[in-house]
Image (cartoon, helix red, strand yellow):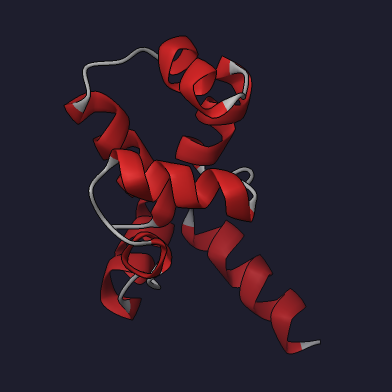
Length: 92
């Protein structure tokens, strides 16, 4: 599970909307949505607060996603052609 999925899990366990969760963190619902979707990451202060809300630690929240899960998520998100393009660009 990546950090965005962990944040979403915490929010849903609390039964809060994007807006409610954002208010508790001094953030907008768009910011929360962007964290959950992996577009952005919360700052250190907010990461600490999210961890507190989820009864976890910042370390557990930010622990890297296992490579097999990351690979599976990439293959579900992108076409084979897109993955090949990404690999070529990384190799340059």
